[in-house]
Amino acid sequence: MAFRGWAGFDAFSCRLGLIGAHEKGGVEGQIGWFRRDHLVPVPDVASISELNALIDQ
Image (spheres, helix red, strand yellow):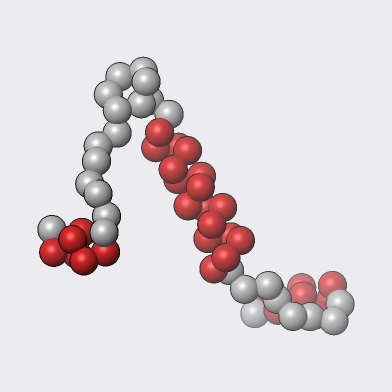
């Protein structure tokens, strides 16, 4: 509760039944999109072969 008050979060539950049946997948998809677009660094390579060598490591 202290963290929620400090960060300004509001706790809530997903909606019950068929109305809220698809909320979890949508939220997880948005988190994955944010992680891929903002938190994963873009490799800095000169060629595809250099990228493949980096992946092999």
